[in-house]
Length: 115
Image (cartoon, rainbow, N blue to C red; front, side, top):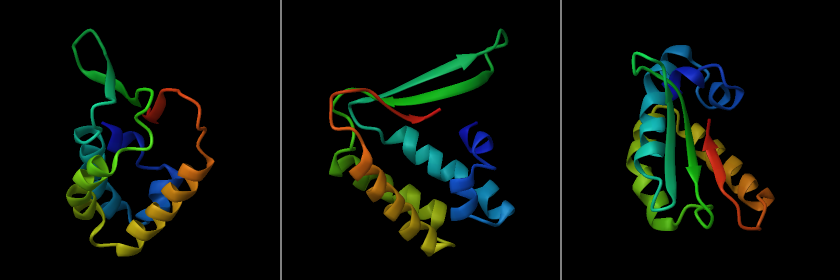
């Protein structure tokens, strides 16, 4: 579901400019995010009356951001699978995350990773 929601997202369009590649690779990326969030990870879903998913929010509770190194390392195999055909995307994504980390607030709070 998230991969469809983020298909036209400017960040992912920049990382994976080819539509077919983005359609094929984003599910791997989001599977990595949702599978490896660590002990502070919380996932909330919204479903319709037929129990079909309509939306998802992935949160890190207080103290969960930045992700611990062991959690980041556990994300690597699936992230590599998502972006191996475009290695520059891995570099660009890591640079973006480093800037985000420096700009992130330092006071205790929940962090919304994906909406």
